[in-house]
Figure: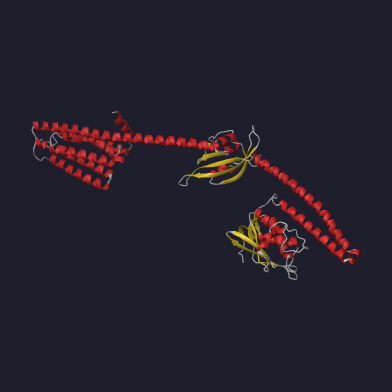
Length: 572
């Protein structure tokens, strides 16, 4: 019986095979019991006619079987139906055994199989209880029969022999039917188990292929990839990560990661703290982008990396670990440092060149002014004009040199982006120009000050250029008027500097942004023609926008859009 033993050893407390075929199984068991009851109550009548108490109990039990069939058919409640089946069978057997001579013969018909039924439908505990009840019933029926406690036998010895023979035949039939049914169940169970095992093996093979594919993909990536599970246990190092650290993933506590894997701060000198390790930050739920760190090992030169890290979650949103990547930026860092050094040298050269170029221009301006006071210049209008033109040209050249120097430094200068009060930058620009209400009307069209994300120094110089531009280009005989505005548009602050000048057409406004273009000034203007171009380039570097709104005769309104940090006042 190897198949049967194997199947029985695999049956859990609630046999899973019953869950798959419980309707069929229950109907088969109930049908077998019903057929055996019919045989038991009809076959003996052929040899011993009459309606005895045992036969009444048998027909009553058959009626109960029919009721149980109807109950389960409409409710599909297996446990109550199985308990009812066992109860009706035990009670019917007890009544039949006690009301018919020969006592145990009817009980032998059912009792050996009731524990099996209890085990299949209710689990092994119920099977044990049923087995105990069956043993006690068999012993009790036998003792009652020996001591004459059962009803007197209404049959002759020959009839009793026939009854025992029919009981033996029915018992044999019952054993065969139960064996066939249970073997069928065991076969189904084994087939299902083999199928499940095959599916599990196929899934395992598929998972192994996926893991191998994923491992190949990760090893082909030029960046190091490191992953940890939800408990902080390092679980994945790709080929590049192993090469970077010279080690594979090890089951270490996160506090040992920095020292074990030689993780240092971006300066390459300070051992990284546990809380600053990108993978640890990701395990804590933080998304890390662009963190610089260094790896310093005794057998290799100092290397620098840019790391990104993110937590990982399953389909239910539950954390299952974290993953981090590391990109080697050692060469980039060296190149950037070289470029910075070159920029510093260029900047230093430009400063020296600017001073050297400014010095002769200053002497030209000073000499021209000195010559204007000589008798010869006072007596000659042409000489005065020539000297004034020479001084004006020298001043324009000086302004141009300054602006060219400033504009050339824009791409390489360091920015300090931070929340800035725009009004404070405007007031600082006014102080630099030394403008007051007597010489220029200044109107703030807003209260308080919007806070924007910008570089304070650059934003102050932008306002200085725009205010100076408005002040210089006011119509002759009209007091300059500068208005400062701001509104919020799409989450950004849009600041404005509006003048009362002559304005310009759209075509002229477009030309104004070209370096060295001078659209609305005269030849005596001392400007360089770079002011508006500098403003636009400065705003672009700060992540903002810069444009002009103007119409002929309605002045110019320069607009600046910058990210809004917060607002201490509403725009008016």
